[in-house]
Image (cartoon, rainbow, N blue to C red; front, side, top):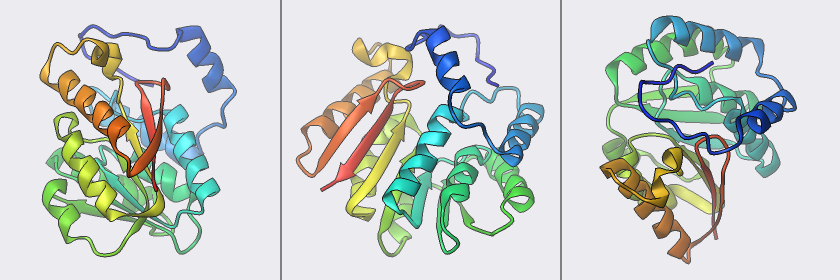
Length: 219
């Protein structure tokens, strides 16, 4: 499913264990599989797709929490937005924000094709600015965007979440480099993880799923 760039990659979970977990996890819908195939054709690398383990966890959390209004920061080609939209009730909505022009184009095309119930609203631009313009509270926020800006997005997300709402954050282990940060992104993610751990406004659990997934609940 994924194409990785020619950079060192640390398998956080034993590869055979992760494959077994995937085999024992609900399969993606046919439209999600088609979106993955199209993304693979359209882009050289699709390693930024959240993947089925993360996608199914998002769907499960939405169904368990009863979330109806969802905010996504970082759309890429639309995989996770469509995953979440599939789990929402009829009146539910995903608002997703993407800055990259190429990803905007692809996501928009994919939503037109696969979002038959019109549950997804794509906002084009910088999430730092667009988040401030959004009105009302959200039940759930999924963060998978610029890693260096995670500390900033955390504050903005907490402000937008209702009490009891969930913030789900992807890539928080960053190939395991957060243990000994040696570059800007690893350092920013380590700072983010420590910020969350010390914040009395939330309770959280960091899961070693795929590249690290934090589940954060606003008190």
